Structure formats: C-alpha cells, structure tokens
Amino acid sequence: MAMPQAAAYTLDVSPGRAAAVPPTLRVRSVRKVFQSGKRSLVALEDVSFEVAAGDFVCLVGPSGCGKSTLLNLIAGLERPSQGQLLLGARTITGPGADRVVMFQESALFPWLNVQDNVEFGLQLAGVSRRERRTRSEQYLDLVGLGGFGRAWTHELSGGMKQRVALARALVLDPRVLLMDEPFAALDAQTRDRLLLEVQRIWQETGKTIIFVTHNVREAAVLANRVLVMGARPGRIRAEIPVSAPRPRELRGVDLLGVANRISDELVDEMAQAEQQEREIAAASAAHHMGVRARG
Image 1: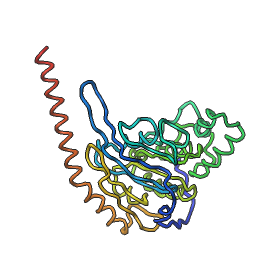
Image 2: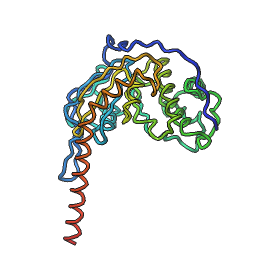
Image 3: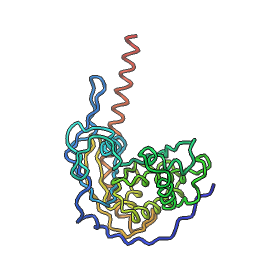
Image 4: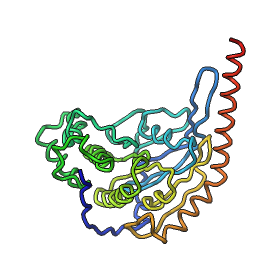
C-alpha cells in the first residue's frame, strides 16, 4: 500500500514562541537509581529543566545515558529516586491521559483495523461510538491517512503504521506527547517525510512534544530546543536553541551549524559512554568466568 501524499502547508513559527508561556512540565533535581540485588546503577543525576506549553524539545545523548528513563519518568511509568516532576501544579506520580508515549515500534493491534486502533484508547475511556468515530477520522486526516480507516495493519508500510500510532496518541488530546525514537527503524526517505509531517502536525495542534533521538540532524530539524545529555549518570550538559525557519529538512544547510554544535557537545560524552560499556562487558565476563570456575 503506497504512502499517502503529504498535504501542502506553510509554517510560521517563532522559535521563541514558548519563551513567555508558563512551563507545562518542570523536572527538578531528579535522580534515578536502579537496584539489582546488591548492585545499584545511577541512571540519572540532578536533572533539571522546564518545558513550556507548545514547546518542541529534543533529548539527545549517548546510548545508556538515561534518555528513555527520563521519558518514562515524565510518563509516570517510573518513579524518581529523588527530585520531583510536575505537570502544571501537580506532581507526576503515575501514568495519566495528559501524557501519551509514542515508541519506536508502532505497537498496533493486528486484529483491529486502522480506525479501531486509533479509537482504542477512547473506547477504554468510555467515549461514545459516534464521538470516537468523529475524532478518529479527524486525526487520521491530520496524519495523512484519511480513507485508510478500514485498512488492516499488515497492509501498511512502516511509515504508515507510525502515522497510525501518532493519530492514536493525538486523538486522546494529551497535554504532552512523549516520542521515544519513533522513526529509528524507518528507511531514510520515509523518515525524511515524517520529519516534515511532524513539524506540520505540531504547528496545527500546538502540542507540547518531548522527542528522544540519537540523530543530531533529526534533533536540529524538529526542536525549538535541544537538551544534550551526558554519559551515565545522565545529566543535562547543554541546552541548544534552534532558530532556523520552518519547515526544516535534514539536508538544510542552515541546520549544519546547529548539528555540529550538538555533535561537539557529544564527543567526550560518547567516548565516556563507550568506556562504560567496555567496563560493563569486562565485569560481566569476569563474573561468568568466576561462576564457571566455582562450578
């Protein structure tokens, strides 16, 4: 099934449009420690930042720095060991409909068609069938899948499945949309088109978006602000504003300077993360050798 054509659009977004808006999300001195038996792993240390309503923030950092852990804390899927996360005036203590996560995999239900997948959360919330249908059609149109409601998920390309997942998230009307590397598994052409689509959808909906990525160019394309995280334990090492006009593309020469600045911030952190991975691998190998020797 072919990818539908994206609608033409014009974005007129001021990069500082969220600066005067009170923060929707506040992360205050957050620390996260994972326990495994007698061993502990500090995943995050003293993480603090704010996100204003309608802002688009990207989190980048080396593997294992705690980006996804931080997203899970905001989603309420994990609890901080120390510190506080607030949505508006309310402390985040668990999952809620005001925050929706979109993962790398679309996680669609294969026994449901596209429209029923989009309506699934609304059905659980007790929304009437008529209202579900109206809202699902609205958001399928928004993501460029109008007319695909009766299609089955196995008939869709990877990019189309992610569009369905995006419609399923948006139809719940969350205050904050959390996106955890949703395009990492897609081919380059599909990813490039979806980067344009996400910018359009963000502009049309005014949603607050926090987007995790390893790709520095992707971050430069999407974000108003890029938060660069250091190697474990993860901390916010730098905040980089992006003022390039929209719509932006990965090949845009005006983003090269931003991408290079992000990369420069990551050089030492990547080296440290790689060293940590080698040390973990060596410790694991030594542990297994000790177990075999005792056996």
